[in-house]
Amino acid sequence: MASSASYTLINSPANLPASVPQGFQKDATGTVYAAVAHTQWGDIPCKAVPGNAWFPYCEKEHRTNNFSWLVVPHSSLVRQGSQPQNAIPCGNQRDKAGTLYAVIAHTPHGDIPGKGKGSTAWYCHGGKEFFTQEFSWIVSNKPASIVTLRSHHGKYVVAESNHSVNAN
Image (cartoon, rainbow, N blue to C red):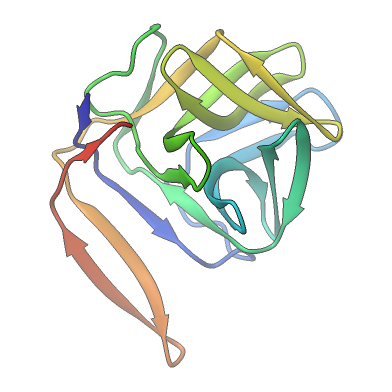
């Protein structure tokens, strides 16, 4: 299914921008935000707080400070078994998982940002990767426009394009 969603990835791990979808863990971490970890296995949708992100991969929870915040100014959560039209295709693992979408997993540990595809979401907590069918897709309620901010000699350069992404 093609997805046309408007979102921005901002690579500024220490500074939380506005309009980042959030979740909540039922532990000392509290509020966690949607992000994309830039890893040796690809770009993986995950949870983050300023300075650190945790992503699920290969049955483990991994920590990194190499991540971008997922900014979706006009977002909502859609709880359904199939991918909605404006789901956020912000990840791509280099293994057979392919394109991954930003989700909020509804878990015994709280509502935690993670990665989703098809009817399954993956999230991490307490050093482990978990999966669930109880999750909401983060969707954009704005027409498709992908904007990426990149640092160029200490200044941000804005690159914008309109496109659709086909799920693998």
